[in-house]
Image 1: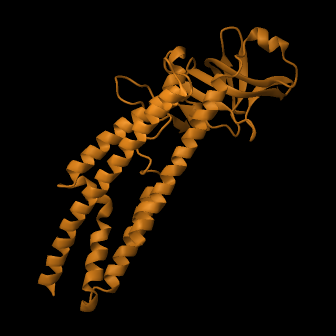
Image 2 (image 1 turned 90 degrees about the vertical axis):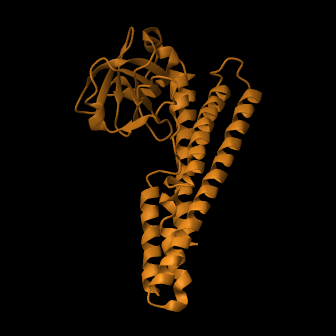
Image 3 (image 1 turned 90 degrees about the horizontal axis):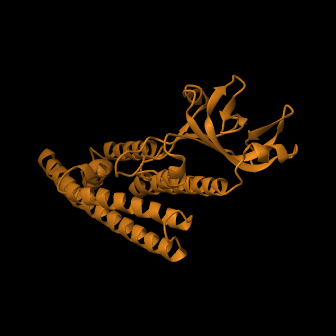
Length: 296
C-alpha cells in the first residue's frame, strides 16, 4: 500500500494535474489566437471598455512598474505583467519534439533583449487613462515570448504545450523520498526479528523500485517504454492540432484517429514499464533473500 501510494498514486496524480494545466493553457491560447487582431485602426475605434484582443510585436521597453511596452507594425501598447503568467517558447530545431514552454518570472522577463518577439492575448481595459492589456481572474493574459516565424507560432505552441514525462513532476521527488524513508523505517524496525524476515526483505526490495527501470534486464523494456511514449506524445500533439484546425484536412474524425493511436501506445508503454520493473524486482528480491539467509 505504501509503494502504491507514494510511488504510484501521488506522482500519477501530479501527472494528471500537469496534463490539466497544459490542456487549460492550450485551450486558452487557442481562444486568444482566434480573437480579433488589435491594430491601429481597431485601436482608434475602441472606447474605455476595451475588449478581448490578440496582439503580436516586439519588446520596446519594460518599466519598474511591471509594464511591458510592445511595439507592433503600427501601434505600441502597454502590457501589465502584474499577476500575469509569462511563457518562453524554447528554440526548436530538427525533427525532435519541442520542449514545453517555460514559465518565467518577472525578473527573467526584464532580462529579455529589446526586439524579442512576443504574443499577447487577453483583455484590453483602461488604466491610468490609457488602454492596457491587463490580466484578471476571469480573463487571464496569455503572454508568450518566442523566436519562430509568426505563421508557425500557433502550431509550435500547441505541439510544445505538453511535458515530456508527466509522471516526473515537482511532486514526484518528494513523494519518492517519503515512500523510501517509510520503507527503510519499516525494514529497520523489524531487522532484528527473524519472524519478520520477509517483511524486511520486501521493504528493502521496494525501496529500489524507482531506480529499477534503469537496470538490466528490465532496462530493455524501459527503452521501449520511452520510445513508445515519445511517439505517443507526437500523436497527442497531432490530435491537438487536428482538434484546433491547424492541420490540413482537420476534422473530428482525424483528431479521434490520432487520439486513439496515442492512448493505445501510451497504455502499451506503461504495460512494458511495469513488466520491466517486476522483472528487476524479482532479481532484487532474490539477492536480498540470499543475503538474509547468509546473514542469519
